[in-house]
Image (cartoon, rainbow, N blue to C red):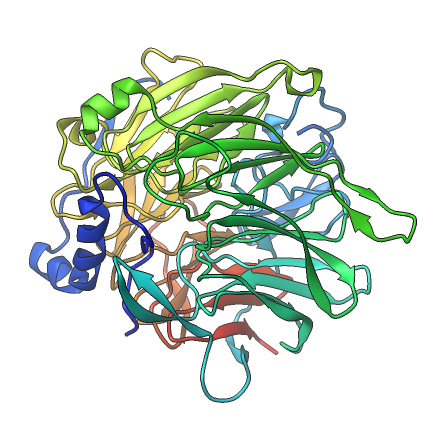
Length: 525
């Protein structure tokens, strides 16, 4: 196994970096801990009662049991992201799964059919060897292979009719390949360090790819310059101040109405006006301007956690006129962006402290409720009070906790993977290797399965099939067509290395990378 779970190497620790270093060391010993602690604690507590033109402006199809239901168009929406677009394909201009968890509410997982008898069709790169490169962790260089947390590929139908697949990997490169054959469409673009996050494809049809890296920059590439990716712009982690913790970029950005929304491990949230257009030569061009940034922390948080680990490692989510994100200090924030286009400064309208590191992305349902997953590392009382999987109601800012699920009987405990919501259920995978099926309304744990952890792959649900990988390289499919019923396993495919990256399901194929060094296309044929 290739270093399971070591997701967050720190090229230049500053402030209190002990927790992150301990996390890396503990992750390597994770399997032993999980055996010792067994199934741990899983308790549920009910606390209370249960953009723009882009997200699903047209009709779409979403999974419902074992069939596919066609949904009516949502129609015009005057705000940034129609809350009812949750669960739907993002763009009407690009047919695809084009950002981490598919859309601005981080709640779309791909398009079926899901393979019934899946097998590995091809691997990338071809032949022996894999996608590997050295990178420094706390001053010690080691070789990283394949792809890790979050690592979800983007898959879409190109203007040439081919299926395009784009992803970043531990060989420091952004890859763009043919989804049918695995051949390079573009020459891999090599950054200055490994890539841990998920790329985003421009939802408005501009030939642009957005990707972070550990090299201190968030990058923007054009795909309309022949066989090469052409970097048009990059945002430095040191472009704003004050900054804390790190210069990585893990989050998968959102692009809505010509604005880029992105959080960084510099602990700041950024909004960039892209000013996209086409030049006289017909090639895409941009003129980005940073129009807003704000710290992901506040003084109250810093006093409670007692350290400087407040990086934003998750992918921001937007519903209505509010953008949500969390940080490694456990602070969940919502910022009102109603007047952004008119020049008004965003204002904070929601604040909640989970009690510990919250790197999983926030998921938002059609009613605007938030599903938040947190880790358990510091051992603070607040983390035990709030649990490690939470449903929050931001319309009740003083008492937003609706229900919680606990996973804190071992350290490091809790959840790194982003939950999935589907058919009245919440699916979550814990660091201890548990796959949970939780009732979305009540928070009751309806079933659980024990996998080989750390389990950092975010669960994927398409057409009534739940897909989850473990750290022994087993990618499994479960039948969740009867929500709430303990799902039988449908199939399993063995890959090389721990599966930390989130798979993309697209029209009969599953695309995913693993820590053994390879990227896989999986399907019936």
